[in-house]
Image (cartoon, rainbow, N blue to C red; front, side):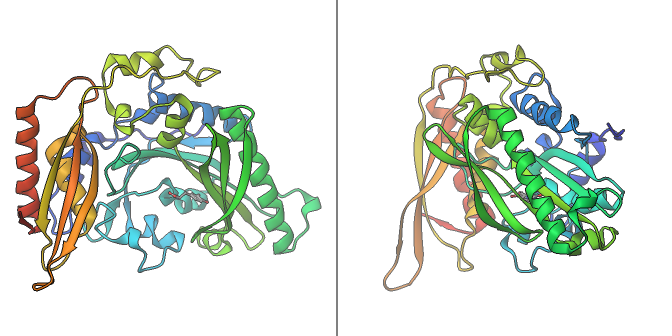
Length: 385
Ligand code: DAH
C-alpha cells in the first residue's frame, strides 16, 4: 500500500466555489464532491471497490483513492491524447473551475502522473464529474476505478522478446486474463465477450461485456497504453503497459439490482441498512437489494421557444437538477416543432419528480416547477410558453 495524503475537503470546496467567468460548477456539485462513498465500507460502492481492490492487491497492486478531483486540462485531456475538438472538452459536458482547471471526468486523468512517479501496478478510485442527461442511470457525480500495469526491459519476462509487437501482444494477453479473472471475482461464473472499442489513450482498445440478467452488458473499457503516453511519462522505449476503467455505480446497480442511481446518495436507513451488514469486501452472493415501496411520482411538462443561440440540453438538465435536487427522476423530450413562418423551434420536456423515501406533496412540486421555469428563462434565455 502506498501512503496517501488525505484530502483537504474545505480547501477543495473553496476552490470549486471561487467565482470565475468559466466556473460552471453548481452548488449541488460542490456540496457533494469528495463525499467518499467509495471509501465507505458500509456503502455498496465502497464494498464493490474493496472487492476489486482485494483482487488486485493479491498481485501487488497499490491503490490511490484519495486523489483530489481538481485536475488540469492537461491531466484530464491533453496527456491522454484527447483531440482538441472532442465534445468532452466543452463546458456543456465538463465542469470547469477556470481556464485551466476542471473536475476530472474520468480517473484516467491521473494515469500519466502516477506512471511518471514510478508506479507500475496500481488502481485509481474516486468520484468523477460529468454534465449529463437526467434518468435512472445518470447522475452528474459517479465513481470509477481505473487500473494500470506497466513493464519495462527489467520487469518483462525474458521469453517475451524485444519487438514492440511481441510486447504489445504480451500486454494484451495479460490484460485479458487479468480482467476476466476480475469479472469472475465480482460476478461469479458468467459468460463474457470482448468487443473492439476506441479510446484515444489505448491501442488496441477493447470493452468487456458480460451476459447478466438476460442481456449483454458492458462492464469496462481497456487497452494497451499508447507508446507515446509511456514515453511522455518518462518510460523507456522498451516499456509496455495496459490500462482499464470501470464505473462502480453501473456495476453495483446490476450486481444488487438497485433500480435508481440516486439511491447511492440517500441516507435513508431502508437503503443503507441493507448493505451496512455485508462483509467489507462484499458479500458472496451479493446482497439482493429489496426495494422498499416506490412512492408515487408526478410529471410536469415545460414548453419553451429555444433561444437564438440554440440550446445545449445539458444546460437544461442542469437547471432542473439545481431546482429539484434529487427529487428529479427523469427529464425527457416529448415534443418539438419548428414554426413555419418564424423558423423558431419550440420544445416540450417532461419532468418526472419522485422522492425515494416519501410521497411528494403538490405544493412542493409546484414550487420546484416554478423554480425550473425561472431558471430556464433566466439561465438559458428561452422564452417560456
Ligand atoms: N476513461 C474511460 C471512460 O471514462 C474508461 C477507460 C477506458 C479507462 C480505457 C482506461 C482505458 O484506462 O484504458 O470511459
